[in-house]
Image (cartoon, rainbow, N blue to C red; front, side, top):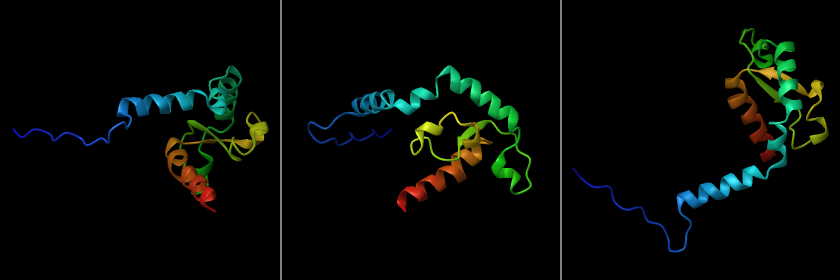
Length: 111
């Protein structure tokens, strides 16, 4: 059975393990990520999911999909003061949040 060739890594370049550790350290210091683990957010998330039992994005197309994710209409980084504002939150399904919403945000960043 053939052996896998060694991966080329330039001298003094960080290993994958070191790159992953640096990435995790940057994410741990992210102030907005910490808000998602607060008791206030966890309670508010449940309120929004109870208020919006079906995905707001799918409802536009006449599809009844249970919502399981809470989305910030105005991005949390753009308006941190509205992070806990119920009027800025909507219940959506995971496929919409992972696909349509993320695509919209990427396109807005390019503009």
